[in-house]
Length: 412
Ligand SMILES: Cc1ncc(COP(=O)(O)O)c(C=O)c1O
Image (cartoon, rainbow, N blue to C red):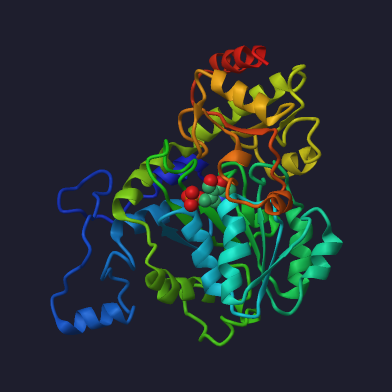
């Protein structure tokens, strides 16, 4: 399978046949429970000896099919699908973080991830140590024997920064700490995480993968590269036969106890989304790149943020990491919040909505929305400014979108 190209691999990731009616695509198994012929069979399934499904909070054939498609796309060792990107992040840390541990992370994060580390985990006795992800010395000094992970976003949302993952991975390897990266902004068709030292990927499949914002979802992608005997919580586990201790802990305890497994309907929709991911990503990313380049020198624009621009300080990392254009998100800085609001209200094609990578083009002012509950100090730490607009390019024609932005800028 691995010598095939991206979309061919995903579309070829079939479900386990036979089906009673020979359905070409997997039917939705919209049931909670699975029935067994006798008591010994159900007991064996509960002991995990047969791989059979017992209850849809724990596993389900439609969700397993979606997980196989992500496996085909990522080349990972194992994949678990959850109800949102945040569920992927929270389940990951409930699996590996113990009271007394710390997480070393860049504070330039999506708002709920920042709040989960900063507020939610703090009450469980897990400390977050914010570092500048561009400062390798600071990272090396922050990591100690109680660090359970280093966490960063592949391209930070909405700052558009890239960390030097191979260099960070080298530091972490010498200290026995896993590198966990939120790769939501650039999927596997353009970024092969294993090549850059990433141990675990967490992804909001709500974004590119859902296929037009059909629902929320998330995946935890385990590349099987980290030695979990170095993790305080997982070291005491018996070595599982087929998967990593991390995946075994998630499947055997965390996911079923927290109850955030993906639903069969979502898995069906997102499996369809996976089939078209490659073409949608290419088209949306080309549009984003063209728009960012076009408006870079506009007199009303203070700065455009897109990592493939010559002006981006992250251009060389972007070129080294990504195949083709680095995604459909870009940002624009204007003179003030007032200008941002007047500009956004004048747009006719871009929809004022949160979310990313819908088929429709989207626009949002993060400072007054996603981060509105943050104190001024938290906003400063998270690097959120009031003059920045975040765009997500959709599938509309680039020339129409260009004209829409041009017309709105004329009003400033
Ligand atoms: C980079 C990133 N990670 C995680 C999330 C959370 O994903 P979800 O909304 O599916 O929980 C988001 C949501 O916008 C995001 O942009």
